[in-house]
Amino acid sequence: MLVLSPRLEPHYYTTSMAKVSIIVCTYNRKEHLEVCLNSIPKLTADTSLYEIIVVNNNCTDGTDILCRNFAETYPNTPFRQVIETKQGLGHARNKGIAEAQGDIISFIDDDAEATPNFVESIISAFDKLPRYNTLGGKVLPVFEGGMEPKWMSKYMVGPISKVDYGDVTREFPTKYPAGCNMVFRKFLFEKYGNFNGQLSRSDDKDMFLRLKKHGEKVLYAADVVVYHHIPEDRITYESILKIGYSNGRFEALRLKDSRTITKALKLAELAAKFCASIAIGCGYFIQFKKEKGSYLIPYMYKMLLGYIRN
Image 1 (spheres, rainbow, N blue to C red):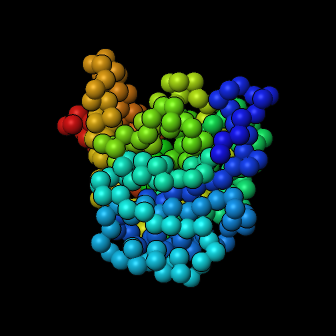
Image 2: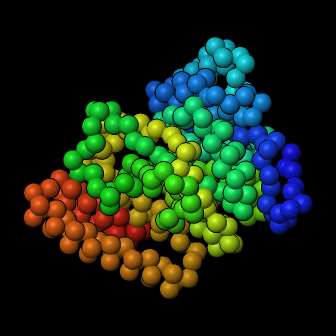
């Protein structure tokens, strides 16, 4: 139950008695989900403070059996699996919201590991800074090959959802957190609506922009950390370009009902970023860091192309 604090404005809530609902949405990624679930028994918070909800989005790869086995192995863990038949990440996230019993809703990806103090850190962040109703934490990549790819740069953290703005908790320094590690007070969805089920890749961005439009500030909580496992096939040249094109496509879909001027401004923004990537990429080539330039420029081009074609 949400507890209203008389010392705060009406839409701010204390979390001293809060429960965190950790929602993991998954679709045919059993091997990744297993890594995620293995981090749950390591949580140090009292089990009365959290629940784990896996949203099975029509999986056909044995995810159901994995979840059943996990529940049997850890009967004292507040864990359950629910099914969402509408395909798509936005629909799965909305199912998790509907099923959540907690005052606070945390989303982590099925290929992410929660750190042991994950739950306590979320509750502490909201307790210490009650004017914030949503937050994002660190997302630290763990590469399957053991090493960061040579093409990585500060301009290419998006494709792997890396988030690391240091160890100081403060207002989020960019537009929005990564969907891999984002947390909301539940009443926000009741007040502003759920995720857009038509968006798969940018439904999180759409949600945060909507919240900011209504004056909600987003907190960067430095000690709310997840480790994001990145398989080798996700960081290939072909995969990175596919992500870029998909990002552009879903930006167009997100803005399909917007005014023409809004769409034009987004096109101008993406075109400017592509031009900037050429300049930055040339700088990398001069510094003999060709991998960085040879990924950055095509990635931004594909994003622009995906936006134009959709």
